Amino acid sequence: MNAHIFREYDIRGLVDKDLTIEVVELLGLGLGTMIRRKGGTSIAVGRDCRESSTRFRDALAKGLTATGLDVYDVGVVPTPLTYFAANTLPVDGLAMITGSHNPKEFNGFKIGAGKTTFHGPEIKELRRLIEAKDFATSNKPGKVTPFDIITPYNHFIRQTVKVGRKGMKIVIDAGNGTGGAIAVPLFESMGFDVVPLFCEMDADFPNHHPDPTVVENLQDLIKKVKEVKAEVGIAYDGDSDRIGVIDDQGNVLWGDQLMVLFSRYVLKESPGAAIIGEVKCSYTMYDDIAKHGGRPIMWKAGHSLIKSKMKEEHAELAGEMSGHIFFKHRYFGFDDAVYASARLLEILTHEKQSMSQLLSDVPKTFASPELRFDTTEEKKFAMVKRATEILRDAGHKVVDVDGVRVTFEDGWGLIRASNTQPILVLRYEASTEARVKEIQALIEKTVAQAQKEVGA
Image 1 (tube, helix red, strand yellow):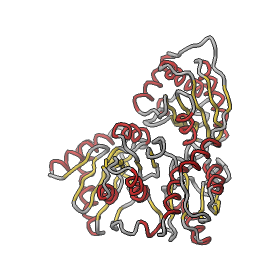
Image 2 (image 1 turned 90 degrees about the vertical axis):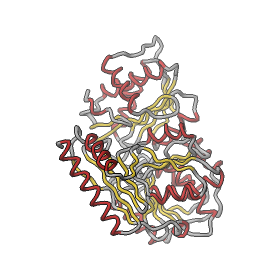
Image 3 (image 1 turned 135 degrees about the vertical axis):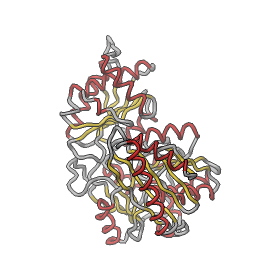
Image 4 (image 1 turned 135 degrees about the horizontal axis):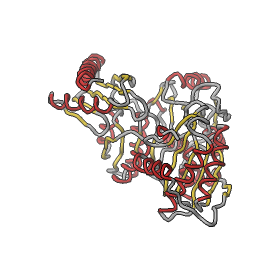
């Protein structure tokens, strides 16, 4: 078994190479053991539309039921519907088989006990159990029961999201992932005029890569929004836990811009609420949350890490640049792009202003895209540690919850080690283009010095 399949937030690898039927069955035995030893008796299991996901469902269920766990099979669904099942069914854990937006030769597992997903320590414990073959056994294997989670999910959204005016024209680009099959009929039933784009499930992703954080993947949606004069365009990633949004003018709204909009409305209903962003989010977002009476918190990126921080801070809302939006306000606190789009549509149908006008009062800034600096797996964290020391010693104000973010009155720069690749991620933002260049020069000089000093 390849150790590198065990990542910080999930399990991922190449189908039939890293993830074989035998390995997946072992994952089922390990996860089942962890849930049984916490006193659990059942689990919700969902899967995406990849061919390998059906085979993996069978192998995973074999391992899970061998430990005595009953399996509720919620079928081919977006990842958030498996989370929804874990929060609304009498189950003690969850497993979602999904390669997310990765090419079809990859697959993976988002897993957890209770209502939330594992990260770091629990994933390490799962690996330890499997390597030691320290599995729970049962004289009576569990049973597998198919369960329709889509009907109660749709009902929940229709009951709790209050749409204003009917007939709004929207475009949904599901990128041939699992989101279109849920979102299109749901929003039509709520009175929207839905123009679907690539909403048929196809794990070959023949039209564009289903990753809404990459501008090239949004070009079809931008074109369609302008062509049909839609009020908003919504894109989902492969398993619909990340959202991309295009306004009525064809502009891309990133995660932190959506968070400005969502937080204003959450704070109307929950004054003083804690709202969490990650280190790559704009300072305009944090300022706007504070200006509207909220308590902004900067935290680490990563869905499992954000969810545990939300619990700790009793936060009502959290979001990442990558389009993961987590609503605890009127929801369960997990990242769900279909639910986030329902909340966006709720806002738009009650507003007289268009999407582009609603954010026109946010100060304009200049930001770089995420820049990659290649390094090695072994040295990436040491480089960030040294860069933090260099900036701090120079008297700069730094935040080091996730990499190092150096902040100024009029901007900031970030150096962060990727959790998944041997790279550093760099990003800069400031009130003028000239200032961005100055911050960039400081960050690049710091990275070069750190690289030299740690011998990377």
